[in-house]
Image (cartoon, rainbow, N blue to C red; front, side, top):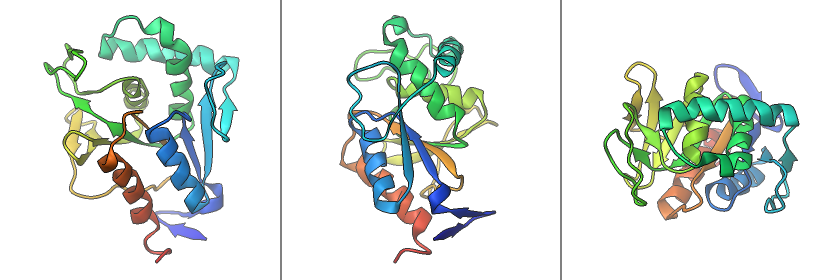
Length: 208
């Protein structure tokens, strides 16, 4: 089975880089299984990780991750991150090994608060929760990034021109062998449909 984009991609060569958490990660993992795509669900020294596709990151990737998390936090300006470093640093592997990133979450505009009272004091859009670190690392490394905002029920793409998330009127497609599928644990029905839509749109020419 081949997918015809700018170059031919064999579905057997495709890998979704994710985190194995309940919610969005699990939805991506289930869709990968349905479509025959390999999942790498990254973990670092935690017994809480239950995915059948668990991949323990190397110590080198973990050390790189700490550096990348701290760089990302210069944008995010959040406190108390070090107690979550094993989770946040493993997010670096999701970004490092991907060319595209698809995420489900909530975009917080500058000056806005999230549902837990977090205030975005920065100049740029950020993503709520731990997913925000993966997205910010992706921005720092010029990845192609799509976010489905559950509050707005819409897809957005990061613009490196405006340095903000711009609403798009189409469903994004997977166009790279290596992509990240990540997002909030608190996924709703709209978020689940958004993930399903990515795969339907990507494979619609070959799967009827």
